[in-house]
Amino acid sequence: MSEDNTQHCIAFEQHDHSQCQSQSMRHAKTLCENRRVKLTPRRLQVLTLLTQSHQPMGAYEILDCLNQQVVEMEGKKSQSIAPPIVYRALEFLLAEGLVHRIESKNAFISCDHPGHHYAAQFLICSGCEKVAELDSPDSSLLTKADNLGFKVDHSVVEITGVCRDCNKNGA
Amino acid sequence: MSEDNTQHCIAFEQHDHSQCQSQSMRHAKTLCENRRVKLTPRRLQVLTLLTQSHQPMGAYEILDCLNQQVVEMEGKKSQSIAPPIVYRALEFLLAEGLVHRIESKNAFISCDHPGHHYAAQFLICSGCEKVAELDSPDSSLLTKADNLGFKVDHSVVEITGVCRDCNKNGA
DNA sequence: ACTCATAGTGTTATATTATAACGGTTTTAG
DNA sequence: CTAAAACCGTTATAATATAACACTATGAGT
Ligand SMILES: [Zn+2]
Ligand SMILES: [Zn+2]
Ligand SMILES: [Zn+2]
Ligand SMILES: [Zn+2]
Image (cartoon, rainbow over all chains, first blue to last red; front, side, top):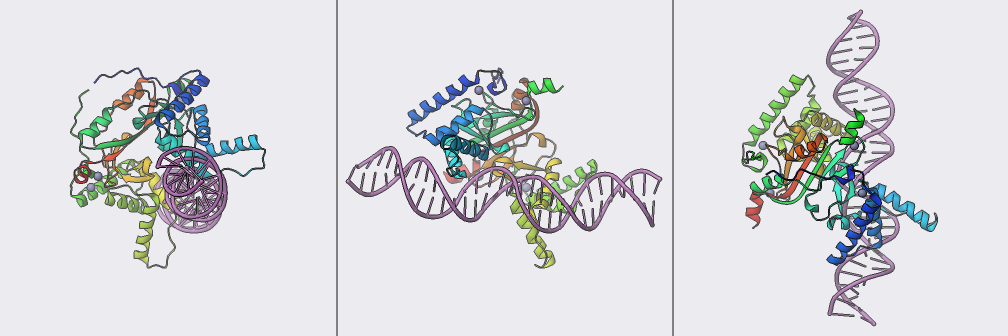
């Protein structure tokens, strides 16, 4: 059973995030082209916000950002955007595995590792509020479920605690 | 690593539930006495509902039951109970590990295995809507987190799929 | 028994998160 | 050029959760 224990949690580590972000966006575009699904301007706008922050955002937080951008673009005249617009974009992004929902925070985060989105696993630091996706999800749980004759559709794994950096600093 | 694979998920199995329920209640009472915390009438009332159903209930579903009971007791005259009453009872029961929150359903379920409530793990059947708590939670995930220098406070593990019975029947 | 502190309860109002329903516009397939 | 489907925008409302305040019961110390 001894799997590779060298996990990388990019969101907890120093990294060139502007490159990380543009890579995510490129990846998303390719993925949508390959699947013949449409990454429309709205969806792109929401995904861009999420990849930029690299952290969970609430639906209404995203909504506020969109409205900000509307003001900047069009000068304060125009109507403000309504919740369904955000939820619909999120629905698409979730379905394509480009975004995950963090159930214990009612929030959404862009996927770091498209490919195993059906079994994403997260570490959530209560110190710095950062959330990191495990890059090699643990499968022993799913195996156990399988042994019970349980056919897995989707798994939610969210571990809350204090990350290494916050442990160092807080001590 | 080869752990015991003989999981029992009592909520998915035939069992004498009225005995299961009264045992849970006895256990809760003893636990509260030992800890010198008060299982007040309200808290008892909410816990009773949850152990009776042995399934997740939403806060407002619980609220409706309470109001039902008020009507039965006092004849329809009296005021109806308000949300904070339920949420406060739940807050207590969660803190004592007598109840778990199912994040992916915004619902609450009584604990089958008081003792490891810090690391409960659930199987959620989308066929029969039953939810079962694993009686020996998998620890390999928590170990991985630990190896990353992450101090775990609380873990949420909720696996959605189709249980064995529903697989049989649905095929 | 009196007094204060604390924990529990009840009530009102409101915040936060999410969806239903409808109509218009754009895209796509035939 | 249509007709169907997908997408978008808007209004209204549903579902979930908490803030704030006042009252009551309990308990410890005097
Ligand atoms: Zn990054
Ligand atoms: Zn941290
Ligand atoms: Zn039972
Ligand atoms: Zn089932």
